[in-house]
Structure formats: C-alpha cells, structure tokens
Length: 105
Image (cartoon, rainbow, N blue to C red; front, side, top):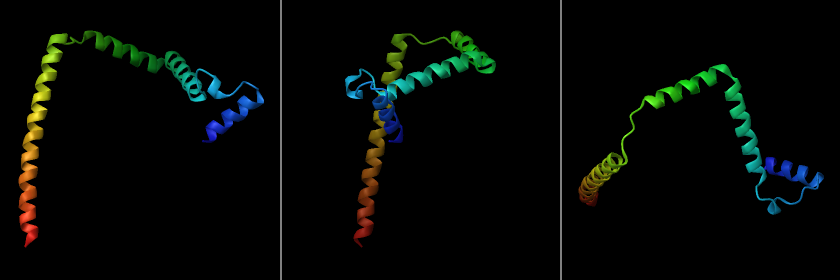
C-alpha cells in the first residue's frame, strides 16, 4: 500500500502518466530491477558464483529419464494415489459410521 503510494507520487511529480496507460506496472519494474541486481550480485560474488557453477556441473552429470519413462512413472503414481485415496475413503466411511453409532447412545 505504501509502496504503491510512493510510486504514484513519484510518477505524478515526474508527469510520467498514469500506470493504467503503461504496458507494465511499478511492481513489474521493481521486480525487474531486483532480478537484475540479484543476478549481478550473484555473478560478482565469488562464493555464490562458485556454488552455482558447481550446481551446473553436477546437474550435467545427471542421467535424466526419457519422456516415455516419465509418462509411465506418472501413470503408476496416479494409479497408486487413486488406490490409496479409495482405501482412505472406505476407512473414513467405516469410522464415520462407527462414530455415529457410538454417539447415538
């Protein structure tokens, strides 16, 4: 809220037009500036740069599954999650009936 008011004030003083006329808003500009600053900071900070370079090297060593394997694994996961959900639904139904029976007395 305060951030928006500050931007409104700066834009009105600078006579830059209303935000509605702009293709991007102040939050987009702020995000862009922060992203560029973070990228520059990581690039120039030695330890962070070394860390990200090591991450890239390690990820290049990974053997990624093929598309067919990924689809098959996703199908297995979907089926097993559905079976688990069905089992839990049945158990929940049984417990609900038992609880209703106990609370009726």
